[in-house]
Length: 553
Image (cartoon, rainbow, N blue to C red):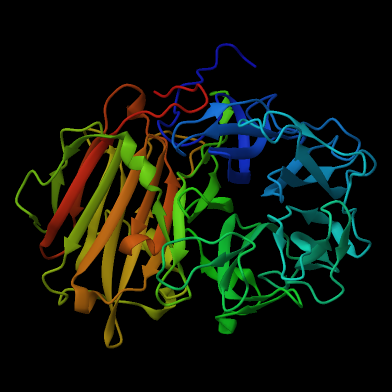
């Protein structure tokens, strides 16, 4: 690696990333013997995906915030994975021995096969050594799989018959599918003879659908914030099926899983079999998510990869971060997930500021939120809307394209009710800023609330940086509530926003040029026709976490 690279340039302060080189998918997160373990796709040879001969990086933590690297758990050293140790999951077996199921690229035809590895010393709290038995691959490439697409085994779970099950994403006869395998001993696996757990053609109907990084997990009753172990009793328990697709989007469906037939029945069948029509996990830039049950705090925790959008990390010597871990539970409607940063982020809170001006932000106005280092901050705000009379009429063509509407009506376009929200990572002259905002529209006899993250002015760099807009319609009754809540985590080159208490989430990467030489500013703004009241505002400066020995600018 080029010694002249500045490994600290652009690094985040509290998001997970290795000290150097490339990372992508989260793999096998788990809590075991008092420690959190996080594995991830890692290229130790450089800051790109390279030739795909990836390892499993491995870090440990006591609090999900501060992380220490303990060396790679898996490297591509065996005939069944010599061309790459790709994604998979971790399972703790009876007796406390952790096991990893992962996809290997073999030495013959670079075929994707499923392998197992076991912790060599389960009593080692760091789980530093892993062994691959000679019986690998434990699940070879099936004959009916096409396109060499057979990968990413889920966390294994036990059915009521005592057998282990695992689901693997596969392209079967040109159809993106999820195949279930069963085993009594975790070494010998047989495919379920029935239909796949899930099967659907591509979103455009003109080619095979490739699915990745499946996740299937049970949820507690709607509205209950606790999590469940993946092998929780099946009676009456709702499950979530999450799939990632090649559009770099993660989608999910709530439904009922039958462990006798290994079938999944969606709670919203009207959304169809193409997961592109399911609910979005995050409406911004986030992919390949993986969840685990945290037995320590009895919750389900979500990890997800957030890659670079400025052309990669060649000049920095590293690429890729993970979203900050999120607690996740089922909303009261039983159909959608709620996501919220794990409470441990509060251990990083230092200086706090509240409202420093009159609560009202006038039409066309901005109010600075000063007094903290706003390039690493946790901001929570509630915006009250005195009246909705100025709301613009929504063109129905945008109902299925909120992202397009955000691009059409960005933060710089004045409106009726909105845009209002936050300007983050802003330069002193405002030539650079990222806007997270709401805009309210009239639609038939009700109102629709649009949430946007507008990156069009996030960087003045001439080339290489993607500056899109992201968007989503909120499922809220703004006419009744007359208020909208927003929480935003800011960390140098990433912003994660949670609207409506975490029912709508939006992640984005930005690369402001000014941040290398000067401080950033933070504002509440309102470019609508009428005043907006900020009834609550709390902003915390966040300390830098200890993450794998890396620094930050």
